[in-house]
Length: 442
Image (tube, rainbow, N blue to C red; front, side, top):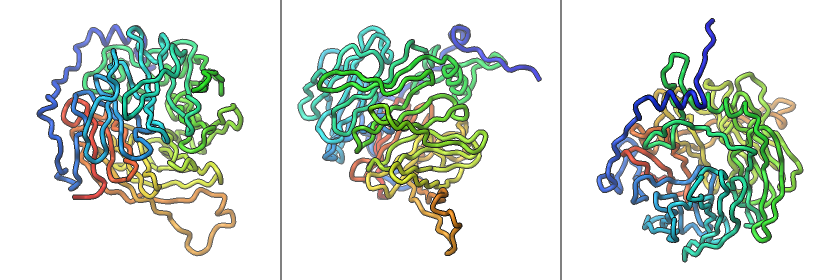
């Protein structure tokens, strides 16, 4: 069998640069509807953002104030805020070079938005050091927390005392080559036939290439008051997806990044470096788990589980206090890039996926609501039933047709605190915008 070869790094960059750019003609925002009812589902949709290239936050980065009044998102000219329900939008960051501000997350208890500001030169994550601020949601006043930080900060703890960051000994460009307009940037790689690989295949190559670098890394905390930096854990594994628990100020979750079938992905650790745990140990070759997130009470970790990859699909949960596990089964078309949970834990949601992705779903381009159901015993239990995974299933409802969405843009959905809306980002009308879809049917 002929060995397959892929071009990466400088070779791929040269080859891709010689190819014509993938052009996209954006629709002017004025021609994008502000509100409509989805013809296929009967759910109301609202465009929240007013400027092209306005992106809602990553799915596990809190976007809402604790009182449920405001949400934030990133616009092309800085951080924006919107009043939930009325969807009135205004600029939050108004300082000079406000376009360089980007949201980390909103405080869970205070009217504060934590933001990073890239340098005018070297805007990569930590390339030349980033500056961090706390911005008052009501006044827009920015207070410096830390400047010129080595590394990249991605989370704030539940009592607003610690920042959580990742540092790498050297930068590695995961997505070299021309970026693709109207997407999150795209992944680029050349296949053995000399042609560009698909998005999904190129991402796999890029992830494997980065994992193989074995770059020394650290997860660290920064004390918001004193600026003291402490290393939580260090490794040559690729450390990513850092998250503080929504309720426990000392509980951290992170991942070993890379192609999911190659890594033990989901890990927890205390802020002092103790109690490091591998949350999911595979029992099957090609079993994968990832895109992990906390429930809002901080008691559960939830994640995408496939046994094996691309064949059987679950939304899995692990209880941090009891160690109990529940696996909720779903159909192929219902698999989603990311899942989400409502504040009360009664509903899940998923943002779907296209046919090129891991599920190869023929009809997967939808936003879904899921009602979890436990599959009960038949009256007689196995002697060790309490020690086994508890099975469940998801009852799905389609709430928005995403047929016109380009899944090279991750929708990254989140429930509003009152559970009445799902916020997400989409390129369904060309440019990326932030949208809200109403959970209840019209």
